[in-house]
Image (cartoon, rainbow, N blue to C red):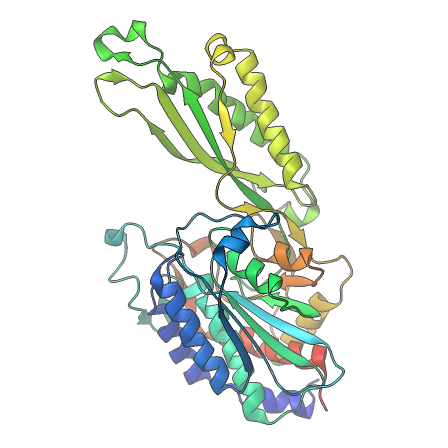
Length: 421
């Protein structure tokens, strides 16, 4: 089922170079907001230039982006942020296919949990271990392999292929937002997030919340004279559990396989500054899942109503209002338009270039840059090597064979979408 051009591009995929690329990328400790985030963007810009793409590498105007009414939120402190986009120079009247990926990774956490330095990639057989190995430097390596194979094969495209490599995905989507604001776009987009052999065509959203609960300080030996902010918070915590249950009734079919499609989770609790004092303040921070098709403003309003109802029924909280705010990442939900041909194109490309079981479609319970591209009118899905189940953990790893298979399926998908001359 492969055309001569498709077979030529597949033959040009250099599997050894792909593996070396993955190791190089994992070794750059590009934690969100760190100087290495800029370092990897410059490294990738050089790669794109050597592949013959027209490259736009720019320092983002952070104050202007943060002031924009559509800014998606951020959590990591940054003094700078670099955007990077490249396009193949040839092409005619065909569509533009965007290969998109984020370069930032989350911090490694407890170093003792790792078997060695998380930023020194460790190879066992076919598997690469390290922070960012699957989320999502494997996806970047696959996309670079596709671009290199198209160039090396000599196949001429009717349309164009673009690469959008972005910072700040892990903490809100700054890089994707800035890239789209700069005017970079396309007709269709594939994000190389780890999808474990599936197509992710919809993402739930996620909103970061903060709740501040006041108490009344007193000496711990006279705690009856005070009001513990911890005790005052507990009815709120129970109410949030009930809210999560209510919001997860009858989920969308694309999300039905997940035990909790739209999780509401408190991730940080801070209270007290002295062990012998009754704490007069508790701050809880967490994430609120946004349902498919739900406006973030509606999700925030439901959360705030829940908090207000608890406060109205509690003697202490009624007179000492709880403050709710929404800092950090604000991920809306997003979805590929129903009936769009891209999933079928990838399924057929996978069958012809890789073989094996058919690639199934599903949604994902986490936010991603998909919603920003979809919001800009660019049909987008996620397809990449690795499994999200090991991302953000000390078990993070990816199979090189899987990276190669994704590169092969992507290469054929690109050719069938943009066309050849």
